[in-house]
Image 1: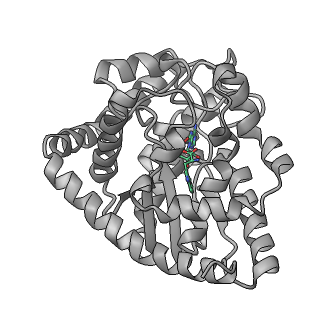
Image 2 (image 1 turned 180 degrees about the horizontal axis):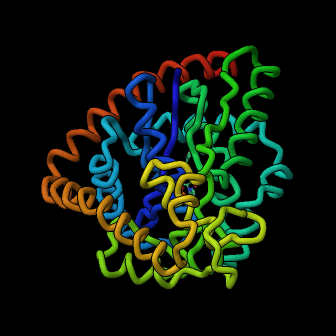
Length: 321
Ligand code: TYM
């Protein structure tokens, strides 16, 4: 199976990004043809600092490697991504882009930065996926609309120019599809929200404990998964389950007569333990940039091989060659 996914180098990676995407990638990479990418061209659609972008890209590459991803590349280094995005732009209705949830949300968030790149974000994302004829896209639940958009565009292209693209499907891991904010569990955990509501992979050990102990829960004091009425504790149970690989029902049983404080303390310690190994490896990669650049270069060449074949085919079908 062919698989594509990406993360924007827009800041620190948090446990939502990890559980929603990279954890799943690790299972997939052994048995499939995987393309994992650093979406730098998507990162520049929201306000950013050009002086730190390159640093963020290399930091994200080191994060991928420290978590165990074997092959990766930088989106802007494979020029076929932007070429295909332009080509498919010509069949995308503007009204469809204006209706996308992320465009509406980000336009509200950055009123002074509503650029055409933000509007066309889903088109570039569709190009990323279609370029590799990807069958599955492992992402968090928040990306569902973008994958549906990609399918619609692939279908439209195939109808207009002849069978070319595979219709990709979203791949979401059940419990970890959406990790919520620790302070407001009705909202998703986000890189740009309140840092106290978010556990970053690189957080210091005492910060992790403090954030988990301060996570919002209800007053009922029963450790039970109920995503409707007990959003806070349910979110913490999902995180516990994902990091311990234990079923939620089993965790509920283990904590049947225990307090929220005891549960939170154990969860904090579990996260500290699991992230300790990551941080050590991350620092090693960060201190060996030549190695990281070499991996990125190999990834670029591998991606380009596949991407150039698709572009050739698309140019021909569209009458450009
Ligand atoms: P980004 O950087 O916003 O998010 C990266 C991945 O993390 C997932 N995610 C979450 N999962 C669970 N709980 C959360 N709280 C949470 N927050 C984020 C996202 O679903 C995503 O899988 N547009 C993409 C980047 C991209 C891409 C692509 C993805 C560019 N081209 C092509 C797939 C295919 C994004 O939002 O990245």
